[in-house]
Length: 485
View 1 (cartoon, rainbow, N blue to C red):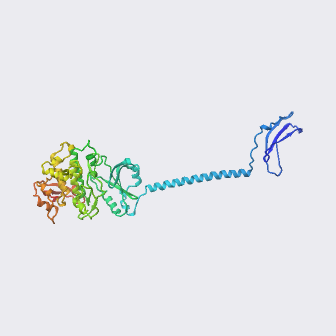
View 2: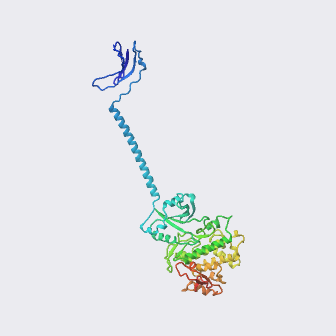
View 3: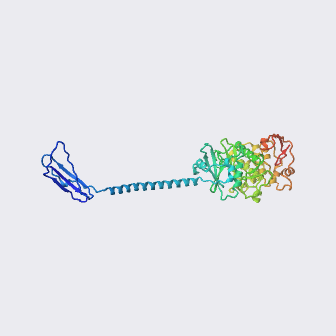
């Protein structure tokens, strides 16, 4: 006997179809199965339960335990659902891809803008001197605050390591508001980048980006001289180191003024611009104010640039820089290095407020060495210290005609030439004969000292690009120049 419960999808109530009294003819092999039909009407039939027994009555079916009728899904509905799933996946994937593309594009554009540089056609010729902003950004770790070496009137200086060569560099960031004069300034940078001297901080190159200019220099591990003079009271420089630093800066300035093929005026000589390398050698740096001019031509008058206390009177008055104004600043620098104090001290007693005047007063009293830095505790060479102080006063003479040239300064510092005996009267003089050059003017004030031995030097010391024949230099008393034979 066969008992069966069948349900049509449209009907939520199952139907019981007992098959009692069905007479079956039994063959050796037979199969039991189910079939249903609703004619031409589209319907679905489900067997919810069934029981079967060959001999006797089939087991009664419990209608309370029948399974739930499955939801009706025809082929059309299944197709629509599948299409919806595909469409949802496609739209989601497309939307996600579009978002990723937009994010990637934004990052790419932002990164490109971040490293965007200003490059004009005329800069092609300066290619070897140009660094990419991306390299400098990586070298300084994104110009982080902890990489700052110092701050100046023109911008910050950062320590960096070039990623390609692991060379340590110093990067100075300078703001510029316009392109006016930029071509000439870049040309000057490229020119200065060719300078090679052991006492000059080498300018490696530059980079231009938006409204800023980046200058790349050799890195000096010991920082600037002012750190030793004012910021390290327990580890000040001894006299030997100070005297060598003075001679190093003099050598660098002599090279800029007289040895290279063009005259370079530094315009801002002071301890903060004198850097100390790993071997305690002094190097003159920061050519941000340097003025390039042709030999034999007067530089054009420009804006007054420099630092108060180091500016020659005529520079502050006329705004015209030349080698003589550099020598004035170098004279003040010599006094500062020897005395360990700034050229102007507002808090000092009135008679000591101005360094040069104070040293002159002590000289008149016969105690010029009393002005030497007290931290040296009188551990210095008296003859050298007196030379530095008197030569510093001479270089910082208020009248330009009274200052020596750097070639004379070198001879005095090396002991090849001696200062005139009546140097005090020369320093105090405020008028010099008009219409005469520096050598003639000083010769009228000082007697000629021919007892000084001559010095023979070669082209490598005198000038680049000139004759390599030996030149005999004879110091002409205190002349501010040299007599060449």
